Image (cartoon, rainbow, N blue to C red; front, side, top):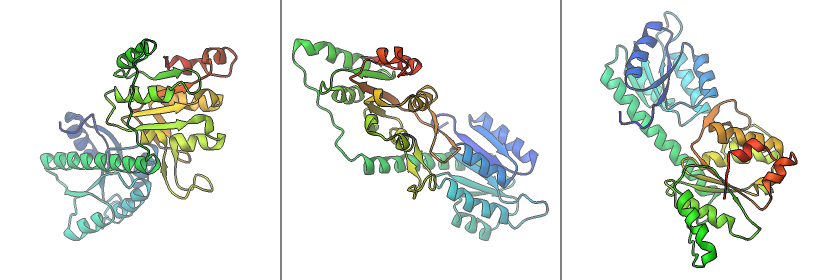
Length: 318
């Protein structure tokens, strides 16, 4: 299978035999499938979770062949997730209906009964294109918000620095999350960049957040993003720093300054890779390595009840 990982596909049709045929076909090819039987079910599923593609019928009401329900659903899906690749299917195909479906956001069109090879090839192509589009969107947002030069030059010749260089060489390639400790001005940020540069993630984003400078009401929006209308100033959807760091490294500086509530939300993402944007119920997943830094004694902070022990446990101290 050419598509990396096991793609998650949403399939919508009101006929159980169609759902079962698609399920068997996709399961044998390594796809993960979720099936629904109505336009409302499609919208609810897309609100709750991100999919690599959707394969949806255009007709749901009995004795209806106009495709109106499916066409209206396409418009709704565009507003929910404009990057979701949608392939429409119908037993009542026509050039006019296909063109209208494309105009409303569909990426491709298949007629029932389908040819298995054609359907699989269509889905694989659209999944690859969809993943590329989502990656492009993340990179564009990343470049817009974080345009600073992320190159790193680490020069250390003294005997005192030799253990640091050896530590970076040893820990850099690992996938473990890391807590970097040291006095202010000791170069914790430089070490973080060097760890990233010496990892398999070096060609992916390195995103920095000064958590100590985040107001309580901005913490979730900054780290996890928000959807349009989530609060007064949310004029458009916005990706958070975790999404911008997808595939790369997120460096959280001044980690000791965040509240216990913020620590709990951070711990969930570190443990599961899952979060929701502010104002959305859709669970998103990220693949991010987390580096943290502080000049505080977090063990003492944990003993005093000001820092979560389970969060500290998730971070390897250097």
